[in-house]
Amino acid sequence: MDVFLWLFFVGSIACSFPCSGGLLFQKHTKNLSCLSRADIYFVIDGSTRVTNSNFMAMKSFIKSLIAGMHVGSGDVRVGIIQIGNHSQLEFNLSSSTTKHNLTRRIDRITKVGGERKTYDALRILRQRGFNSAQGDRTGVTNIAIVIIFGVSDSSVRTISEAMSNNRAHILTFVVDISGVVGLHELSTMAYPFKLEVSTFWDLRAREFILLSQICKTVSLQPGVAIGDCRRRPEIGVTSLRTQGELHLIDRRRSK
Image 1 (cartoon, rainbow, N blue to C red):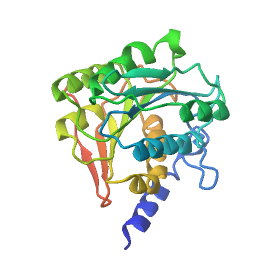
Image 2: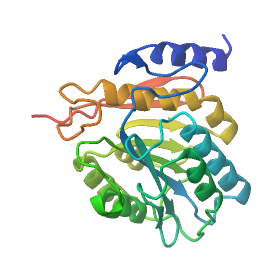
Image 3: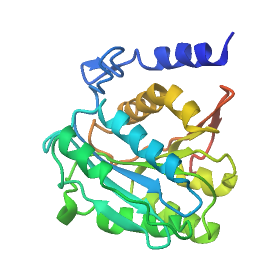
């Protein structure tokens, strides 16, 4: 069976699951009905090694994902943090409350360049991004979607910051475009899901899988209501590679 068709079949099954009274993934509208409320940051790679064309493609991909979300001040809020030599908060969760405004702000983002200091971006995410002063809401799920093109300039520091984010109950979905990020660094950052692809063409083909995994993960947390990650369950990490293999990495902590 063709790999893409197989992935479509898997994604269709995953997206047919009930969530908050609706479907995980609306086949035609791409609306994530179960994520009626969420605080989401995209952490994007703006280091020098990312080509301008890939940076533009990444922004286009983010706009496509946002198109499938219920964006609004009382619904899904979105912010962006950029990775680079001087990682920075591009805009916070309260900056834009409509898809149109978000699209305009994303279009204006320029690449910062420099080294890939992923750890700085992860620290900014935890300390500044998910902060009430930046629009973070109490009792609402904190989600990070990290899109990177390679290993950071310090795996030790990146792993340390990623572990701190895990303890802060930030659900982190990592998209690795390069396929060269170290397993330990990638798996520590990705809690609970990582998607490894070779090109943005591969990524766009799997967009619906990423969306459905975000919704599915939030809805399947035992003892946690939609929009409340304060009591975090012990879950593993799902890894999806371009050849279509699904892997569950058991990272449950002993009690």
